[in-house]
Length: 295
Image (cartoon, rainbow, N blue to C red; front, side, top):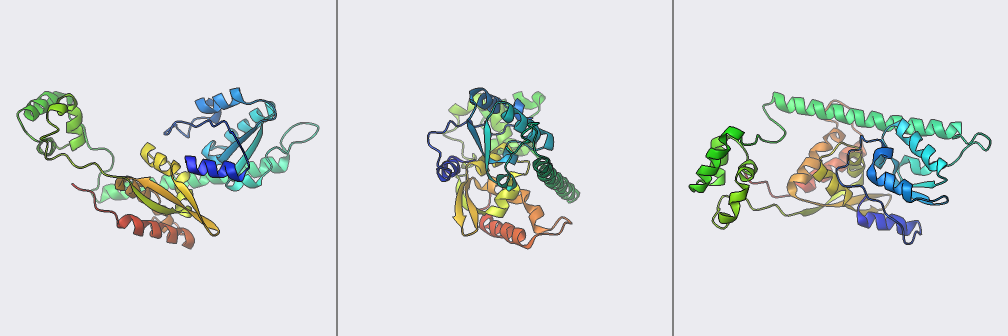
C-alpha cells in the first residue's frame, strides 16, 4: 500500500513506531509468500507476542494453501496476525482448538471459501483479458511492445543517426518505436540531444481520483509493474461509506488501468454490477479529459 495509506491504517490501529517490511514493486504475486524475501525477513525479525499487520490478505497470498501455510508458520512462531481491509478482516484467524492447536473447522472453512472466491475472480479476469486481446487482434490491433532494432541493422541505424537522420525518421524507416532507436544509439545521444527536434516531450504525471470499486478490482488483477506502482502509491480518500483512490500517473498508465477494468462494464459477455459499472464510467470520464498521447 502507499505510504499515506499505510500511515492512515497504523494511526487508526493506534500503532506507534512500527517496523515496516516493504516488498519491491513488481515482485511476482505468484511466489509462495514464504519464498518472498521481505516476508522471510519479517519472520526472522518477529518475536513471540509480536503482531503482523497486513492491509489485505490477498496482497500477500493468493491460493488457499498459501493462506493456511502462513497461518501455520505464524502460529508456530507465536506471532499474531491482523488484517485491516477486505473480507478476511472480519475473521479471527487465531482461533484454534485448545487441545489440538489446529485451526477451528469453521475458521478453516471460511478461509478456504474466501480464498476460492478470490481465485475464481482472478481466473475470470484473466479469461476476459485474453478474450479482449483476441477480439482486438481480430480487428487488426496488435498489442505488446513494438519490435526492437534487429541486431543485423543496428550498425546501419547508428551510422544513419551520426549522418544526421532524425530518430523519428529512423523509426519510420525501420518500422520500430522511437524508444527502440534511442536504445540502439544510446551511447551517441549526449552529442545530439540538444539538436534533436523529433524527440517527444516526456509525459507528466496527472492526478486522477479512481473510484474505490475500480481500485478494489484492479488490486486483484495482474498488472504491469508501472501500473502496480501507481496503484500502490495512490492515496485513499474516504467518501461516506466508500472511498476514492487518488492516483498519480502519466496519462498512458491511466489509460492502461482503464483498459484493465473493462470487465466491470459488462461489455465482454458477463453481467455487470450496476455500482461497479457506474464506478468504471466515472473513471473513464476522468481519463477521457486527459490530453491525447502524441504519435
